[in-house]
Amino acid sequence: MTPVTPATSADGTPASGGDISRRRLLGTAGAVGATGLVLGAAGGAVAYGAANESPTALATVGSTGIAFHDRPHQAGITEPQQAHGHLVAFDLTPGVGRKEAAALMRRWSVLAGELMAGRSAGDGDTGVALDAGPSSLTVTFGFGRSFFDRTSLVAQRPPGLDPLPAFSADQLDARRSDGDLWVQIGANDALVAFHALRAIQKAAGEAARVRWQMNGFNRSPGATTQPMTARNLMGQVDGTGNPKPSEPDFEKRLFVPSGTDHPWLQGGSYAVVRRIRMLLDDWEKLSLTKQERVIGRRKSDGAPLTGGTETTELDLDKAGPDGKLVIPDNAHARISAPEQNGGAAMLRRPFSFHDGIAADGTPDAGLLFICWQADPLRGFVPVQRKLDRGDALSAFIRHEASGLFAVPGAPKKGEYVGQRLLES
Image (tube, rainbow, N blue to C red; front, side):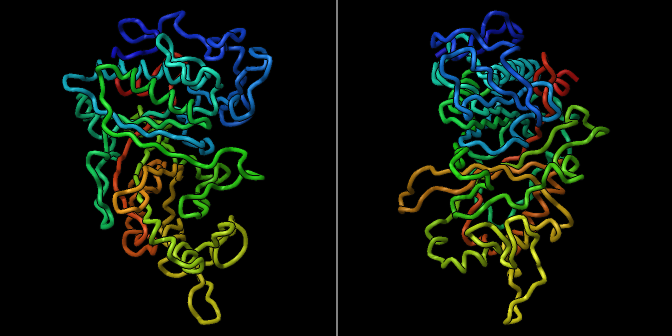
């Protein structure tokens, strides 16, 4: 099948007249133009202008859109977790170099901008998402270590992409690890997310081939009486200790600052991606009390075992009537706490996964762990080393795949992701 791409000229630049609204294809009035997108009050979010396109406006979940261009960082990092996600890594095909990679990133960036605005994928659109608005779709692009070898840009490869160290709990499958290029797709509608995945794959054309692909999910917006931190498949509140935008060092912890030796990465971040299998049969045999001691938090609300609410700081020195620490010395929350790791912190933004039942009857399920930081050697690596040496949770999880990717800042209107690198 001939790959379908957005309307482009021979050199990969956008051609005019190739894009129409998904809703217009259904016969509703008017395509979404610049006036159909309204900048939100925070975070560069945009609202989908559907009120004048259909007798019935889209519900909130469908109408919410997120900007692709003209923002400090790529979308899909600081936005709330979406209900559906796809992670996919590509390898450049033999013979493809810097020029072809630039054309690919140009195509992908044009396509991502259209899809995130709620418009179609251009000629040959599959029609999967015709009825829907943008549904908080984000498409995020990153470069793996090997990308720089393939494009003869080794001198531009940042030290943050040095290989991650081996950890004792790793049982990594090389076929589902690493990759030249990485794409993270998230949306609050499963069809919108799949539509973006399919469009990105087809737009790769002959330049790149899928190396691995993983599917994930989270709780849907509106499923709880009020917004709350998501739970993982162990039933635990997951993400309580994340850095908050209100913290003065939030940007410093997450994003590469100006003045870096690699200006193309300024405003960007590093994503560590791990497929973590949860040994749920073993975990679910534990009593509630034992599960809570493994984690160091109450299962009901995520609060520390030392008391308070989910956001209460852990009292790591508090002892019980028996003289023992209330939060055990090998509890996951204790070992991963920033104060236990020289202040090392990362923004965790995962998806859960379930890929069926294995031959032995156990669920192939767990966490597509994605964490963001300005420097993985000061974020993920020291925390994982500490966990590797004595985390009580280690007996119930298995790291099966791994990847590390440099994620440039967001492109300006008319630019593409990685342009400063590929045209340097």
